[in-house]
Length: 636
Image 1: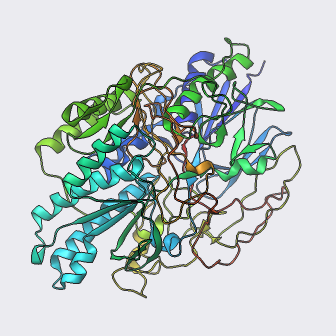
Image 2: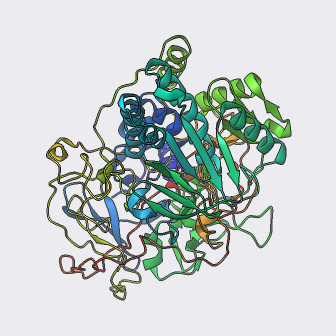
Image 3: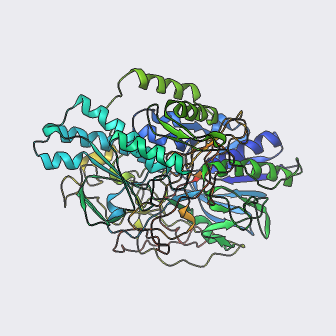
């Protein structure tokens, strides 16, 4: 007799934990297939340390094949789901299509970067939700400091050494904290002229940094950042981004060549085409994580609106902590639907948060006890080691070496600016130069019938590197150093052919098997920060880093995620009501306030629309191209 087929879409915090839990419970009684763009699970909470040169890239990636026994891995991105036909259509990394049939389906596609209608942001800013983006930022910052040190022009030197981070949520806060330490280390080796020092600015429309956390943690983070030299500007947004700087809401123009966008996430657009009820872009499910009307379909993580039984009428936040825990419950309930074990509803309990501020500094409140300084730093790192499902010894070794040896400041040149556009539909994958011609990917189909054709995306153009995906509006990104000219790292440049492919897991990695279900979590979602306040949509919540202790730490999907930033919530349920971002290793769950203004539409691109991406019908199954927009999966 054939075994029941279970297909899990997405290997972020939620998807990874679902696969691990289900594999452990069924022990070969079910055929489990995991569909994911990369062959690894990204532990998003530690991504800022990769950008700052503290950790090597592979330290934060966990092999799916090596840690998920009895699970078949299929590389690809889902672009069509036939609920009545019980099948998932996908496109693999080389542009070929395939179909997976299922008896049970788990949707853990996570979230994508949130874009706001701020002129110039799509062209000149970069997100922080995937490994390629972290590698690009590391090279870019190093290059700017090196060019500044060799420059005879004080104005150019100051501009290159000015770095603007938009979004004071977990990710933005950690990126700014780690970045300041990184550039200070670079300048010690290559002193700048005229006494110029690296300048980091952290902007957010909210009244304080880490607005989703307790005020005591927020004050601790603010004090550490300001003491380190970071300019924290709250109540401030970006009005316009240009090749040579950004204009703030207070009218000031900041000369800079670096704009890091950490303003939040929104659910993956894939769920919008299913024809099922949504809650702010998230797929509505019952407390058992099942989709009403389709008991064979489960959803968890950032893309699912899971009822918060602790706060009637609300839904769990988009955090890593919730995503990780969603995955555990989803795995158990899928097994129960196959006759193994009993199903259970999703409940959570908040046990704390942690935010890594670089070096020995951190802010944490495990079990509600506020901590700061070296003690908080030790708790935070200890949590991450316990939460990670792999690479613990390597991570600990890198931390030790960073404490006793100077960081290596070199540019690898593996990821170019044009390879990681903010509008990318999949931040876990770097665009490849000279890829196959663009093709339209089938769009989600629900109820067995082709979904209604969606209107053309006027903000996106076909991405030659990834069939069916969309590329930024312009074929070349302007080089901030030479206004009006394509940068040396653009596709048209000779070096473009050297670009390699990079991938990052949608979310971060999940906590270790030994972690207890209620371990601390770390927030990993981006906050609203940017120039305009984002409407209170699904992407408003912040992703958290898991910080759990014990065997069940949960991480939320939401890469956030995500990007991820400082998110280490200790408990199973973070505060706030957003979508799970990453908790496994735990991220707390309260949604971060979005940018000012509550009804601002999310723009996927700059102010001018670009040619619409052609929509082609898939082999015998017409489905419109999937909406553009970076894919962040806090691992939902």
